[in-house]
Length: 153
Image (cartoon, helix red, strand yellow):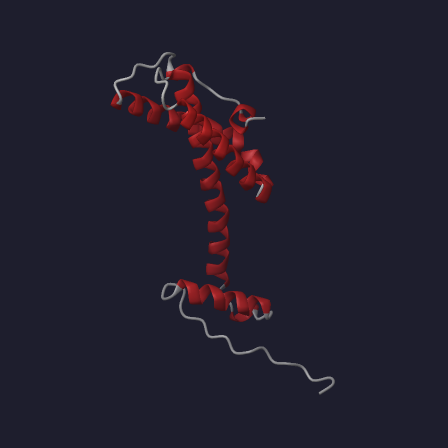
């Protein structure tokens, strides 16, 4: 019928803490339908912020993995695992590149992430080497990495 407007289908949303999956789908439907007054905007905003935090945590984890393996390559006398460490660095750098492609604004966070993850990686490498009875060939405290080195640029 010309000129008729279609009403938005009814959307029932369970409470946020009762069924997250159903709640999220219902919120998306309400927002797409322009029914913002019915949406749980406070929780939607929290979830969006959590997505951003998740991406940052993922970047931190990947950067930490690269630094840990770079430290092992520099400080460990072990020869057998080197190829595996190098492969892990290569693979993880590709994953970092994907994260930065999807969220380029995270690039400005890299100097701080590299600094904090260097400290974490140092502790992990110290423990791992001690567990294997290894003595570092270089002082771990002296190892520091530029963002470009971590990214492989």
